[in-house]
Image (tube, rainbow, N blue to C red):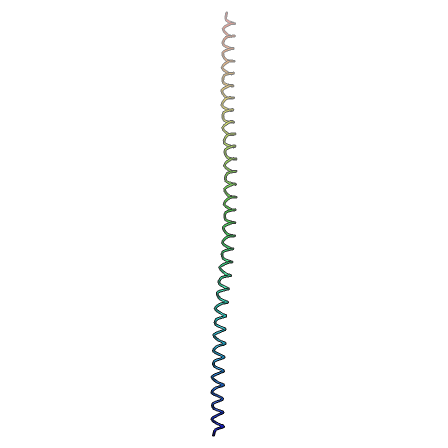
Length: 118
């Protein structure tokens, strides 16, 4: 009977030791998981920050390129408008000149006609 008590006692002690070690192993694993998750979260946040910086830089470059292109187009537009206005002015001047020349020729004919009458 003492042998059975010793066996039962040994089995109990072994079971308790096994449970303690298993619990300790689970606690350590959970602690490691928690630390790993924190580290992983930190890495993800850092990568998110880098992506945001890249996005902001690319967005700024895109906006600058669009602004530069807009300025170039506005400048081209201003040049074309100026050229168009100069052409219109030149056309008006030429029309006026032709009108003056025609009026001059008409007056010359009238004078010549008057001279012939005399």
